[in-house]
Image (cartoon, rainbow, N blue to C red; front, side, top):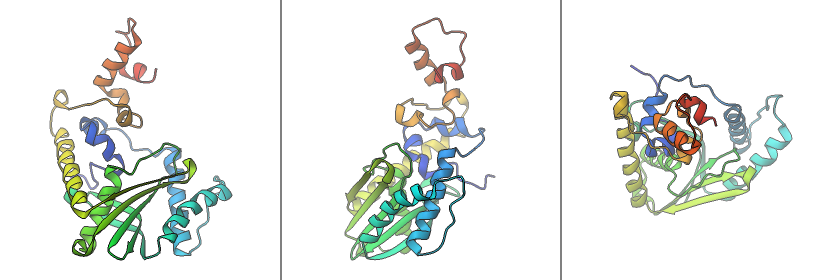
Length: 245
């Protein structure tokens, strides 16, 4: 029995499109990239700045640059006012299945409106509109505090200081529930893939899903597309060769 979730909120955009990617990646090592580690440091710094505590940035990172970018996110959250919680651990098993969890970077109550804020330190633009990760955080938080009845509006905000972007999706509690139900159904399909033989996996190659997929070099569907695009006699090339071409 696994003690961690098969599905991660941060990869929901992938498995909602390509449910077979979950099964395909199960046996691969989960090794964090340098970019992910840098993001972890940025989040730790953001948490300390919002809470007014000290955090020593590891020496391999540029402290001044990190502080400059993270300050943009901190200013955005701070200016909202209201009642703020930082780095809130959330049980997402209702939507993701056993051991499903996540952490909301910041949530802010402003009267009857809720802001759920997410810091993205990477350089790839991420849109808040129809973003399943932050929607899950909002649902998880509201399930935790049980305040749906007093809520009139939900604002899902993604702050990306390094690309000078703040994306926001404003929706009603009912619209949030509806979207969460879609995520829940997609999650069930993705989990089901892990119980089926390989030839029954549903794999859907798409740039947004494949870009950071750890299993892309194993994907037969992506191999077929790459082979077609290559327009050459590539019958002796492996999926790894073509996916990296």
